[in-house]
Image (cartoon, rainbow, N blue to C red):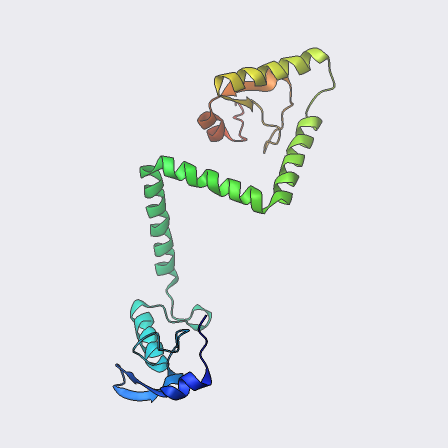
Length: 193
């Protein structure tokens, strides 16, 4: 690797800035590893251009959000969400793939969180399971095996962890649903009036 040495800087002590149109010290420029400037602009001119560009786009930092219109910020946020939803609707395969990849990445980066979630789910299931006969256990296993064989999911009719009511992990509280219907149902239960 080439190192900028004092001897190299002494060789060429000035460089021409295209913006200021003047000779400046080499130390006034951002330097590449080989000792030459990265751009034909000095550090000061680059900063001024960046400031001008940011102020044109409205990106200048304001103390504590002073001068920002809260309604405009909310409008931009809502419009951004609409664009994301439209793209997701137009690209369902890529959206599903991105969600799966995100879930895998989260599980890999947060194993403690995933373990805690799975432990809590198993505990809820154990607490919601009636101590009963081996027949109930075989029936439950058969329901899960049937669902797996059909490529479907097992759902609790009355959710184990519902908002208003919690069900039990028994064969009579299980139903086989497609993944989309099970996701849409989530942990809700419609109570008949």
